Length: 542
Image (tube, rainbow, N blue to C red; front, side, top):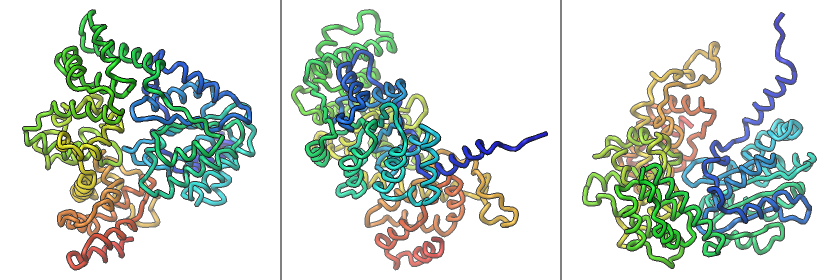
């Protein structure tokens, strides 16, 4: 005789279903491939471990590692998360990334931590679910309410018998712009609410320096501030170890023989790095792509790497060196650089080479892969056919901000507003071309209500079409006046002929953003005299 599921199983399913109302930042957790190299950061990691495992009430609740770009903070954060996980102390980890939607702002931070907290113990899960069942609006409430209802109150009713560690990396990349109210609210939580958590709670936090952070460091006793003196003996010794490891790796991959690395050259390389891990890593990525790594390393050190510069300027000089090796006399490459690298910088979520080719193919004179080939030392994802990402945020800052300042680097500059506008057009044109009723699962909104089984799973959606469905609104509302006529025309076609199809696809993903943002954008950016029907379309479809 068959029996139904137990009440325990049913309740477990219901708990998960309710917790699913809380947004969860996919891919925000720690990565074992990004930890510190062996035998580096030993003393600092020991200090962090002592802080994390000291459960007395007097211990600072926040260990804040604050230093310049390229000093190795993220690798330390990944290592701390790994070590805490191995000891059973890690509750949650969140690595902000300005490139990735969902991880480039604080909106999903606390809901992600709350869901990880719920996985710690069934009693905590029941408590958090009870809050959601009573008030589902908590899932999208202001951060202060989320912190109090989903983290502070449930954890205060639970007894923690060992330290509970949360790792948060690159807090500076969560800033959504000057005067961002939600970012200010998050900083207030770190300043005034974190000390109210049970005494076992600890937050390990990394960031670049910012004025707002200085105020927290100086005014609150529960924050332990630590920086990395990149010129200190311990850091320079770590750099020496790191240089040896990276050069040996290049030797193995390039079959450079037993005499590699040349020890005098390695020593000079270490000195020229001036304590910057990201500089060493980027140089090694670059020389590995050259025909003669030894000669290129020697030439780069002796000719193109001025010492004594601030970290930011030192990285900029390296980026200029690498970018100048590209063929800027070829108009096809120059055009492709602007379109492809611009799309990578403007993308709300990283795209693969194939997806970029599909989105941009008609505009390019060269294939995407060929355009990116000379830039591969600055990117990841080209070999493994995964999403293409920049290897370090400092490169994005260089090409989208600082490159415009100097005549020596102006040709590398990418205007984000222009890149975003092009992405908006490419996404909308992709939807107009490929969003059809031939897609499996499409048409359920027009089905007979009596036989409608609910929202089905939509199949056969390509990566680029999926991206366009998710982010065309984000790109569109970022377009400034004057709006190009071709974008206005494409938007009109989308809203008048494919809006229902888009609603079906986006709803099948469990997220429907609505059209209010587009409506408000149209009111401000588009002259109705030029497109009188667009206003009526949006009003009737909202």
